[in-house]
Image 1 (cartoon, helix red, strand yellow):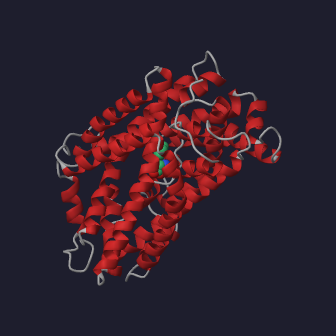
Image 2: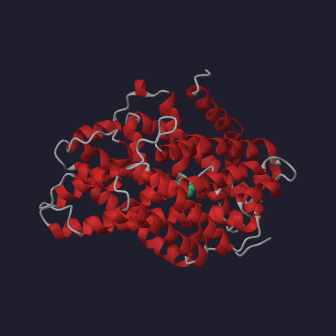
Image 3: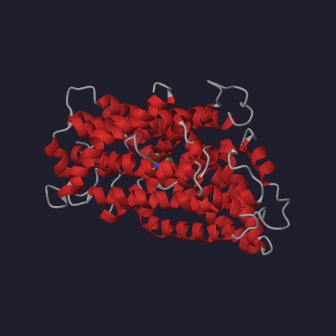
Length: 453
Ligand code: PHE
């Protein structure tokens, strides 16, 4: 089997890579605005339920499939279920990865612009301070966001082709904790703003009357998106795991860290948003219009501090996004490289070129192309909807059925317990979740959304 895919140095490195893929814009950018659009605290509780009941077990399933088959996702299904239609699940996952990368890179590009803005001193007291206007002007500019998107994709491309994962791996060990600490600092600042209490209430006081089919689907989709599930990423990374990596423990730790970062981001965004009267349901721009206010209000009096912290934050955010775009790119590149006998370089080139084209359209759909909608959505929103709310949950459903019902129970338990050397009881619980809870739960959410029940 071709095994010249990028590989990781150490066991910790592999686990960090999985965490690096999971923690990204999904937690810091998407989670807050999804929470804002779906009613706050109740959404968060449903989200946590989805992570525990569906997310963590399905991550274990993807790990097990990847480590067992030692190959890209599509081939993994073929290896474990030869001559069946299961490899279509793998193919759908690869397609989802490609589509996500296309619009994810747009938002990743925005983080680069904000590094520049922070460095230019735009978040200090002397700046005009209307961050909603400047955000709107920026995303509807026909050139600048597109250039940043392309730049981000090229950066991702270079890393995937040159395989500098070792450098990323090493720096992740420092950057991830730094990002975490900075989020804690910003949360404290945000909480101390006048009127922050209403934001805290929004985050902590659940109003279950707001939970309907849309909220359930949004929470479930967000869980899969944030944990990088349903698109073969964890599967591909797990093909480099060592035989003694504890899969349930790794999946559980990644899920916990990922959820903590998301909630922490909520604590940064909502108190500040309420404090400066930004509506919690202002959509994808929420992070980008709210955060500059935190810098401005908390540190604006000392422009140097506002600038330095701002630059640091957006650099860390861009790097968190980069570890996610690498993982998305890697899935599609590995697939093209191994399935169509293309060289890695050619495969990566095709992925990057495709994403540059689609990413450009997604970016333009927020500005000059605003009026071209499909099913009432801009291209950007459509990509987000189709991937996070349809493709990822559908693939995750099939992954859980594959593990729970199709695959030989001995193989499943072998992987989950490392051939019986660790906790058998966990294996039974996970199999139960994969067999019944996850597929029935996912099907229920879909049926509910389609008003079938
Ligand atoms: N989980 C990543 C994030 O939260 C995004 C992602 C989704 C990455 C799917 C890979 C696969 O930012």
